[in-house]
Length: 198
Image (cartoon, rainbow, N blue to C red):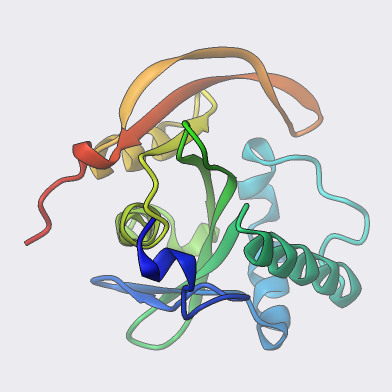
């Protein structure tokens, strides 16, 4: 393990990472109102692809709980959350979460993401996923990044394939989405699969 990974300068909160059109930053309490507005406006759009929302999903209290979980996961080195912002105007676009970080002989983690409805289909999440790769492979030093999506989620499939993920399989009743256990297509990228971005 490198000296950087033994003592990363961003302990407690992952770094801000700049992409072409976007940047990734850890969620902060000051983001709550913008986050809640975007999620509320996009609820119908997001519902088919996400776990069932809690009754208090968008409240500040629930958001504080979310931030505490994010901070605990980052401190323990098992997960990292980012919000996706547009570089031009700092507008919140969506989020990317890296979870289930596994060390030892595995050296992998899982990625999930969401995009506000008004920003979908503009290549912004593809930029966000691409931007996160330097954190996964260079800063965390992981070997493998995994993602899964519903077979009917063509937009997410496109993002993953265009970013360089490879389709690896099909998992029956893999995640509980929108209140029911749902099959998922499995994707992965290895550190050696990364496309040359220079």
